[in-house]
Length: 115
Image 1: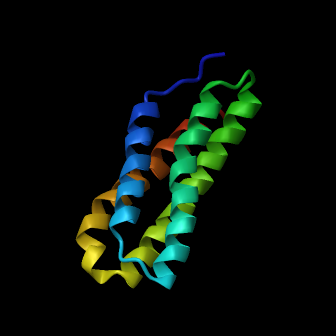
Image 2: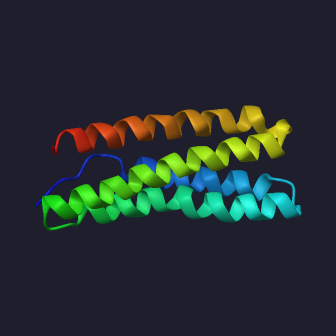
Image 3: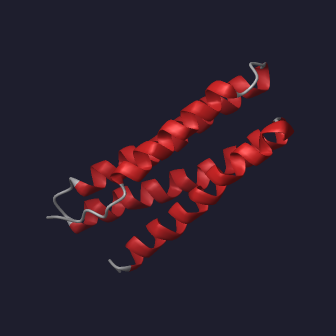
């Protein structure tokens, strides 16, 4: 089955931007914990999306897209906390946050097509 939507490259670039942002954050005890969480959630969005495109059934596809959506929402949470802990990074993080909100809409739309 072919469920592929043209997001894989965009999600890979998004994951790279998450990593680069984390590398630039000040190294302190709070950021270490926040970085660990956002790298997990922010990079798993694309990984689960890639898996969704390789599933054999609609049920599996929807399951993986739901995981991508869940991880996307979690990433919004972590981005907000990173902005709280690092006010000087707010302007740098806003475009990431905006794109993350776009992914929520995209994944919700994809799921809506398979109800």
